[in-house]
Amino acid sequence: MSRLRLVRRNELHCGAEPVFQLVFGDRDPVDEPGTDTGSPGDWWPAFALVPDVFDHAVAGIALYRSSKRLIDPQLRELGQTRVGWNLRSRFVYSQHCKSCRTVGFSEEQISAISQWEDADCFDAAQRAVLAYTDALTLNAGEVSDELFAELKTHLSDEEILELSYIVCTYAMHAVMTKSFKLEFDAEEGPMEEIPGPHESLSTEHTRQALRLILGGKDD
Image (cartoon, rainbow, N blue to C red; front, side, top):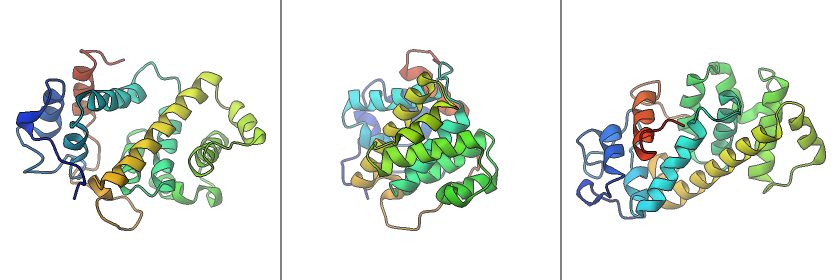
């Protein structure tokens, strides 16, 4: 159960209501929880406690999905999923296992993210990204010169900045979700993907919600 008060639909600020409509339909998730991916959905009414924090967080989701991004979506999702695993956030890990399927990862690769060092299903660029994500999230940003040099053989400086920003943003979400006991982090449980009623993410609904937050823009 959330440690924070959850905002009811009739209390939402004007920017949040269209997003709630797309995510929850006419339901108030405080009374009728649940999303298309099987999560309770209490992240949304918790973050809505502070309107500009809510808008900033949702804009951050829009940023990583923007068509302006240079980083390969597969590499991005590797970082986001590994963050969830490293920081023991069942919510971030589970949701991004689902996202990995939308960018073309196999079930073998998704299962191997948790023990990537011993897996042979990732290429050199993917392994560099996973190692870099570990350094950011397990070593508090202490990245060896050798690892950074390896990363630069695969990614431009701009791509490295994008990847770092996205990974660190999702480290923040993992930590906050656990602290507030939201979503799949409300209770202790094994670090594994929690299946939803629909195997794929509601991509179109998400894109529409982000368009509304950003004033009708995709990017």
